[in-house]
Length: 165
Image 1 (cartoon, rainbow, N blue to C red):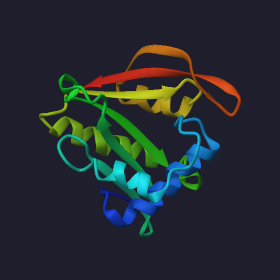
Image 2: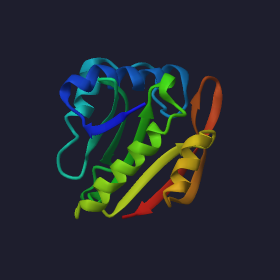
Image 3: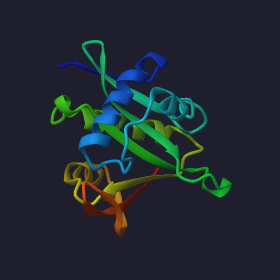
Image 4: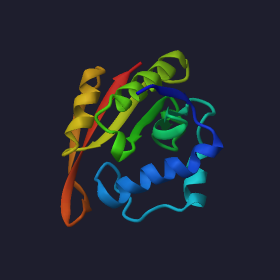
């Protein structure tokens, strides 16, 4: 299984949307409740790969199977050097270190970027694989917002994790 990590390109967008929408419909890593359209996700896509907001794709056999992004943490100007990390992997490719490869690559980009100081992750409290991955890369737990979202009829906590780069 040879996975390539590369900068995301526009032709990746439909596959990245499918990966994200699967989590919208079946998981709790995102609090979106309805699948996004290609047009809605394109807005997000074009906010990346400029300034300190990289978007990278994991590719297997010519097909996107995961992605990682650093996005604006807040629209307030003083937060410019703080970015929010997201990693999503296609359900049939989980457990094959793709999330690990994406984490390594996106953190290397963050460390190389003089505009980036703090990487923040908001992780649903029940997402144990994501929590374990963040711990492995030195993220520190900084707090929980309890019952901050409701999905599939259950209240969910969100944990905040941070890494200074």
